[in-house]
Amino acid sequence: MTYQARMTDPDTTPPSQRPISAPVYDAHRLVGEEQTAMIVLDDKTYTLRITRAGKLILTK
Image: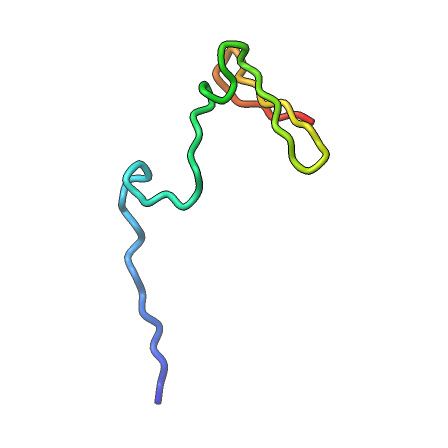
Protein backbone atom coordinates (compact mmCIF):
# COMPACT_ATOMS: atom_id res chain seq x y z
CA MET A 1 0.00 0.00 0.00
CA THR A 2 1.40 3.38 -0.94
CA TYR A 3 0.54 6.69 0.59
CA GLN A 4 0.03 9.66 -1.66
CA ALA A 5 -0.23 13.13 -0.13
CA ARG A 6 -3.13 15.17 -1.44
CA MET A 7 -2.67 18.81 -2.22
CA THR A 8 -5.49 21.13 -1.30
CA ASP A 9 -6.20 24.57 -2.65
CA PRO A 10 -5.55 27.48 -0.29
CA ASP A 11 -8.60 28.91 1.45
CA THR A 12 -9.70 31.85 -0.67
CA THR A 13 -12.66 32.74 1.56
CA PRO A 14 -12.36 36.39 2.64
CA PRO A 15 -11.38 36.65 6.34
CA SER A 16 -14.63 38.46 7.13
CA GLN A 17 -16.59 35.42 5.94
CA ARG A 18 -14.53 32.68 7.63
CA PRO A 19 -15.93 31.00 10.74
CA ILE A 20 -14.55 32.58 13.89
CA SER A 21 -13.25 30.24 16.58
CA ALA A 22 -12.39 32.89 19.16
CA PRO A 23 -14.57 35.56 20.74
CA VAL A 24 -14.54 38.93 18.99
CA TYR A 25 -14.67 42.16 20.97
CA ASP A 26 -15.01 45.71 19.67
CA ALA A 27 -12.09 47.67 21.15
CA HIS A 28 -14.08 50.91 21.27
CA ARG A 29 -16.75 49.23 23.39
CA LEU A 30 -14.09 47.76 25.69
CA VAL A 31 -12.34 51.05 26.39
CA GLY A 32 -15.33 53.43 26.30
CA GLU A 33 -14.96 57.19 26.08
CA GLU A 34 -11.80 57.18 28.19
CA GLN A 35 -10.00 55.17 25.45
CA THR A 36 -8.48 52.99 28.19
CA ALA A 37 -9.43 49.68 29.80
CA MET A 38 -7.81 47.61 32.52
CA ILE A 39 -7.44 43.88 31.84
CA VAL A 40 -6.56 41.43 34.61
CA LEU A 41 -4.76 38.15 33.94
CA ASP A 42 -4.10 36.08 37.04
CA ASP A 43 -2.55 38.60 39.45
CA LYS A 44 -1.30 41.05 36.80
CA THR A 45 -3.15 44.11 35.51
CA TYR A 46 -2.64 45.36 31.98
CA THR A 47 -3.76 48.59 30.35
CA LEU A 48 -5.36 48.50 26.92
CA ARG A 49 -5.34 51.87 25.19
CA ILE A 50 -6.38 53.22 21.81
CA THR A 51 -3.93 55.85 20.56
CA ARG A 52 -4.83 59.02 18.67
CA ALA A 53 -3.59 57.22 15.54
CA GLY A 54 -6.14 54.44 16.12
CA LYS A 55 -3.65 51.79 17.22
CA LEU A 56 -4.03 49.45 20.19
CA ILE A 57 -1.38 49.37 22.90
CA LEU A 58 -1.34 46.80 25.69
CA THR A 59 1.05 47.59 28.55
CA LYS A 60 1.81 45.99 31.86
